Length: 316
Image 1 (cartoon, helix red, strand yellow):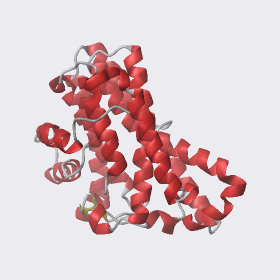
Image 2 (cartoon, rainbow, N blue to C red; image 1 turned 180 degrees about the horizontal axis):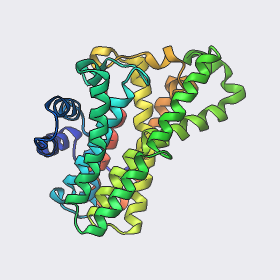
Image 3 (cartoon, rainbow, N blue to C red; image 1 turned 180 degrees about the vertical axis):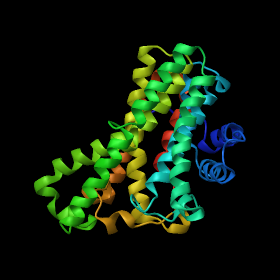
Image 4 (cartoon, helix red, strand yellow; image 1 turned 90 degrees about the horizontal axis):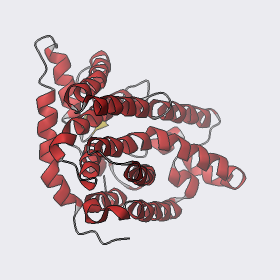
């Protein structure tokens, strides 16, 4: 793995404020938007966060020789989709969470109906942003298609549906996360395959499309797109593995959200299937492979390498 000469902190400090300003500008909206709805949209979208997905858009564009300014609309669009998905995931019908990014979830700060509508409004705003601001028009169309596919029934939404269903089955069978290790000898491959299938879609699809959008805006060729996709497939799993590990090992204060909830719900997780040590080792190996995938970009991909290392080592 090539040495990383850039830190995630440096990346975040240089690009984070630009992303936040762009999101702020695109959610001022017009007089036709009810004030409470606009407030709920901005409450969730502008909440303090790592901005991993928009950063991936910008870093992929940079790796392919593109300009940050040209890729910013795509960066905003993926963060809008991400925020909408979190609002809906936190609802009582889904994960029933009351804390997100260190503050009350949208339905707790407002109400369930307003939260649903805030998510509903952020979804089309993402595509409006791409359609209006990405040039040339053919690239805007390609970006809209890619993002729709990533967020749709066969990817993010489908992965979430399978995750919910898997949790229901385990709960109905009385299987808790710490009991999965007792059955992994007979069904390890089935559980592991299902888990990776869920998270390649639920988490990984939006990470991969973030990279793809940035690359497409920069005019990347098929070789560059394929390399970034390989990086994204691995990074998506790393992100989910570390998320699962933090749910077991971290605290609510550190995470800014409830911890230990996956085990209580009997959800399939990487620590539940692989154990803590093997999950950590697997994540490290995936980061090595992710960085190897973008080696051909040379120093232009330093930001991507730094981000992958951060995802592995993050503590919230």
